Length: 118
Image 1: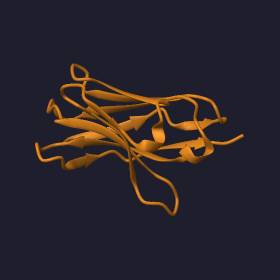
Image 2: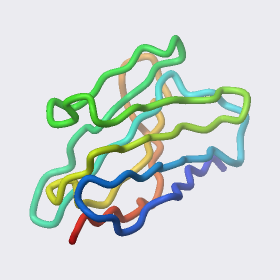
Image 3: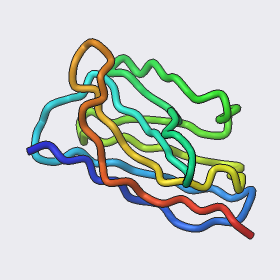
Image 4: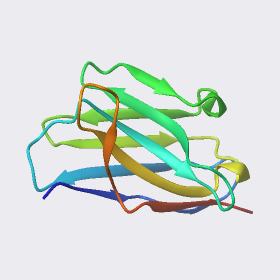
């Protein structure tokens, strides 16, 4: 059974950095794309970043160059380096895997909390 397990969340002051990691276990299946989404209380889930097998990346407009997504297919992991964090980045961050060529992210992790507060 494929599982996505996130790590690296925590509490950081505004302007600080965090690195989120997601490891795929239970299968050597390489997702067409992997991504990070987030959901803050009372808000809809939104795209943070995605990365394809060809290393093509896509970021949410709010990222504004502060975050970098990367993946290692040999290790079946995807990371999100977040710099210059703002209080509005506070949310539960989810790792996701696109398991078909039609853009459907069918596999999700449990989420890791990121809190940006002074």
